[in-house]
Length: 120
Image (cartoon, one colour):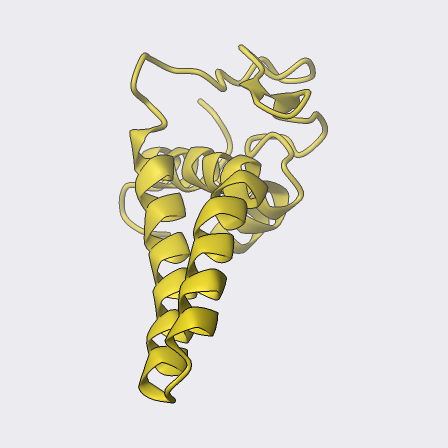
């Protein structure tokens, strides 16, 4: 049986883009590729096709909030051009910058839920 880890530990590892199970190996190869397995503990980082769909939702939701919030505010303040420019810039750049982190968080949260079904 695998050992239980706290949500705080898993989130810390995920924020550093490390294996959520052991925290001793990186999850990514380069900028966009997720490793098949952790080189230290063998944790499966790519369980199945379509697994990271939830990470896309996390990335999209945060991008929408960060792009539309300032965009709407600047438009209401009478600066629609500035609002549009900021919304477009954030909408294009943030998803790329947050790509690895959203996948790492998804992997870690899923692992924690799987290992701690009672929410411990």
